[in-house]
Image 1 (cartoon, helix red, strand yellow):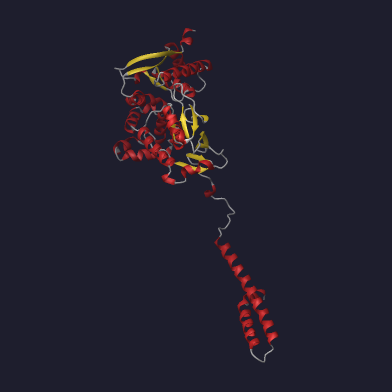
Image 2 (cartoon, rainbow, N blue to C red):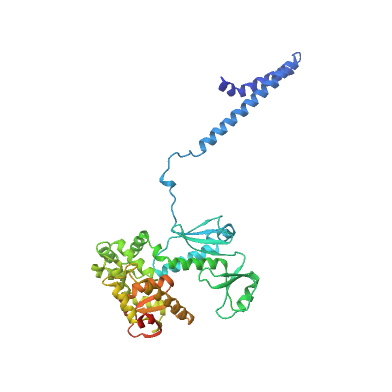
Length: 420
């Protein structure tokens, strides 16, 4: 009955209209007819409004998504391999989308990385994080923070020259990439800073340079199974027979991935995949432990390694390791490719690390590459110790240097241990 009454709103309006007209006829009782007409019109209008409201609510409920009662796989968050988080103050740096200076520079970094290192990194996912301090950004690798820095979008970063520089007014900071002394200055101070010998960079350049440094430092973690498979598919067009004969018949995708990761850990490019596959396939007995075949692969890539570090020069000024210290390390390694974790006496590892820090600082002070020369057997073990204290240190085996090179030792490490 209630529904029928609600649905009769239009009928009541018609009845009210008729009564109103009758009330206007001469000789008819005007007041009763017009009074009842007003009542029926009011009731009809009210009922119609109520009905329209119910219909509108029903339509909204039908359009609204049904709330799920059960969890689905779509509810599981997907962790992005590489992510840049920005606070609200830095969001304008990417507001123009692909036309933003920061986006363009990130794209250029990926192109350069592909050209120099040899594989395509995952895209950089950019999102806002309003919980970050107003001018602090951070980079995440598989959801974990690997670096953060401060960026003032309306200023310029002036990096101090190596020599004594004239003072400038600004906010004193450390360059987020290399930790060098720097200062945030106003944009109208650019010419003054350049004239005083400072290196002046835009905020987007600060963040892009930081990203480039982190991507190269974590390249071995960014090369996953999917990237390895994509790399093989890319090279298959140029070397179909090699890929068909070697992968996975001789070298599994997992083993190849690990070999490439070991090279990337030591900043060795993997763009010469043909040589890497050929050497790996020629040493099948060593493939059970990818670390065992690493020395053979590095030897085959030795020209690339040397050119990446020294260019075309055949004059090598570097650090050496005392033969007696090398002998102690080699005895600890035994028949393995590398010393097991914790096998090296802590005192020896600490001594080597301390001397690496000092020796590398001296080389860099002379403008030289941080390179240490040692025996082939001790190389990988000493490399892992050195990179813990100075990640950019390159440890070379004597066999990796060209025969016609001129070697000069700036310093021989671990003389104290040998003398003791």
